[in-house]
Image 1 (tube, rainbow, N blue to C red):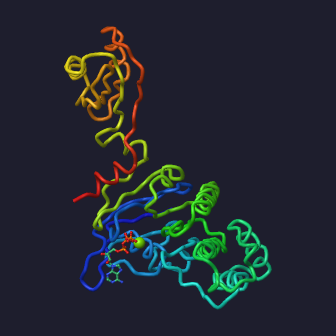
Image 2 (tube, rainbow, N blue to C red):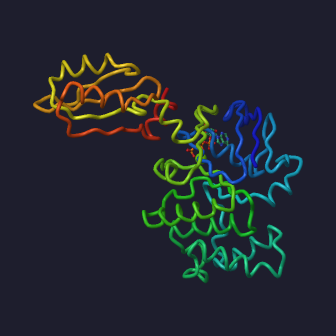
Image 3 (tube, protein in one colour):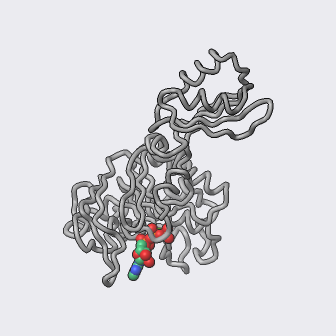
Length: 308
Ligand SMILES: Nc1ncnc2c1ncn2[C@@H]1O[C@H](COP(=O)(O)OP(=O)(O)OP(=O)(O)O)[C@@H](O)[C@H]1O
Ligand SMILES: [Mg+2]
């Protein structure tokens, strides 16, 4: 659905995105992550046809964003980070206006506007002037706008920024639901949201792609991925020596040291060391009251891949 090849974007000489490549397949929900200024919004604007690429090729559903921009716009619903809403229009009026602008057939407009108002919980405010709405409701109008022509692909630039926890949850559920029938590229700084909604993440830093994989695979790569935390009744120095001697164990860290010792055991590159660690504890006859495999979080991955 999205193909980005050797794409570079420069602003008046400043290179915001440097020669990046990535793809999004039809049906995927992909999280687009990166620190402030990494180049997420820039890439999304180019995908949506709002800015031309400086170099490289950017395609949506096989159509070039520059040469076939009309075909691309028909298939894309874009929610920009700063929504340029017409603030003196009423919600209903605005959505109808946007539907018409996006080429929705006249007899379909009513039905489509009704559908997106329902989906984005806007029925209560349909007659309100957009300028008088709270930020969260404006976000929802922006989302409804992105969806009104029923596009195959949604490009959502921080759709939950500024929302309260209830609204974050409802937008997240909406995105999950939309993901059943749409392809979605979503940027956000809320990593738990990504863990809950996205099949895959693309991490960009200083205009370069650092990673593109499932959350599961990424968390295996960083230190702490597949680490095991145990609490055993054993002398800490002895436990450490025995554990570190096990195959596939990279490091052993003593967390607390009293009658019961809490230990974290790190595997070599994502190896599954549960059996060997448990086998050792049993053979040594140590008391055991906690045994847990701890995944690294997406936050660990993000920090490791994007720190300088
Ligand atoms: N119109 C512009 N003119 C000049 N530089 C720009 C322009 N827009 C963005 N930039 C620069 O390009 C870089 C990438 O910006 P971009 O908005 O794509 O980042 P982002 O990943 O979306 O960050 P954030 O998480 O803060 O939204 C930044 O260094 C930014 O200052
Ligand atoms: Mg941005």
